Image (cartoon, rainbow, N blue to C red; front, side, top):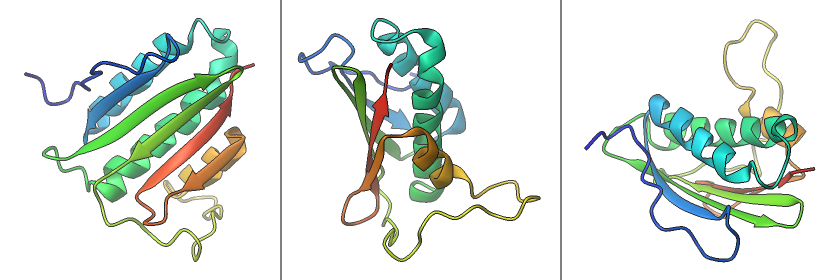
Length: 145
């Protein structure tokens, strides 16, 4: 079995695009997971309208893999996708200790920095970003039209 391949598992039956999957904590697995979500959302929105949602999802997964899992291939990130009308609801949870999101508002890093923009990007593209109490999970509410 390829540990970089996300396991889509059986999805919830509420909507044809609904999905639950375990994403291995690797950068390669992020691409595969985002592609699976894109494939499932194609029937709900034109391809061009998916860019903001998929970009926010990619940032959420990247933060979970890099910060929550420390890119440990033995760990995985839980991903859940549901569709409600013209919105996608995405939950991303990692096994890490989390962070105090109340004390660390998203701020843009200096212009030359190569990292640190993920939370700003999620807030830009999502209708809402909500963290769980522990700070190791978030819910993205994303427009599909």
